[in-house]
Image (cartoon, rainbow, N blue to C red):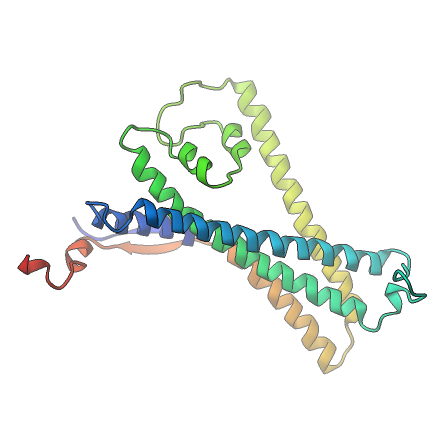
Length: 250
């Protein structure tokens, strides 16, 4: 068969690559249950890092919003208000931006670990034709409400219970509303950062550089998880080229 091209995102490329790597281990001596547990542990660490950066982002956004739009709240035990602290707006703007950037990285990293975990579930589930999502959900926290809201619950085969048009319409609308809500949260964060930059901007080198760096962190953070797809050449015969050096002598 000739080589051909597939349009893949980084996440899908990871999933397909892991599936091909696991296919080389036909005796399951490498991709074992022990290795699976290690991947689960790494995925939990990735989720913990993601949660920590999310908390930092929420606190930084809240503090920045209070500085920009709220009253001058006194620091407990002192007569000094938050707005009286020099460069408080700039510090919180930078902290919120850094938290957003690291959250974007942590989210992507957690999704890529999940992609590997799911391939183990697919290998186990395909023996009986079971939906691997139910195996993944036992080992890793999944957003199961998104699965049950879908038109087709089992993406691998025929559903046991086919939904009516009213169910499809209602829960498709619910999914869209949730997407709009999350988009609104992102827009709210960007608006708070914009006002922080507006206060901080001045036509001199340091403020301009500060604003440019904040904008760069957000642009990169967003692009990381937009994950545009590009063409990849699907090469045949790679498995024969990947044999160990002594394979011909065994």
